[in-house]
Length: 177
Image 1 (cartoon, rainbow, N blue to C red):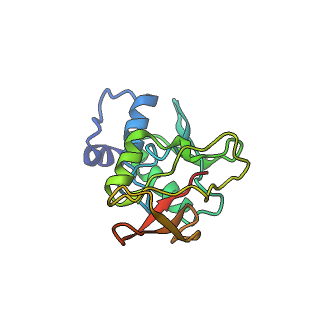
Image 2: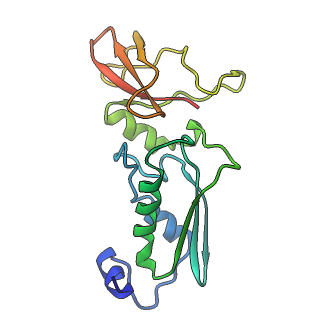
């Protein structure tokens, strides 16, 4: 698709428009996570670095889990969203800095909760485990802490399945990593 058409469709002005990091981050905030579309890659804290150069836009993302099956979908979604700026886009996943659930923004946590997902608890620095499973997860439906872990392996690596003994509802929880 020609650049001018892509810009027009995306709402980006095609004449005299300067692309900067803030503009790219705002565009990335519109890219939903394919597995949990109520949150964006920005709200999940996956965006590690954005570089806007005269000849390209470069984005470094952190995968929530190394073997996440949605990585290519995320890369493609980011590339497609940023094509509207009329520059080549280079999206890569970085592993030098590990993603942790503490990177999820407060807006992202609120959106997870509102959609029925229990957001992850803050990671405890004194806890040696990478995935913390011993703490009861508050139910996103009724708020009760009387919950039980049903399955550590939910539909994806980053989620687990719980059951609330108070309201009797099953729910998914984003793992604290």
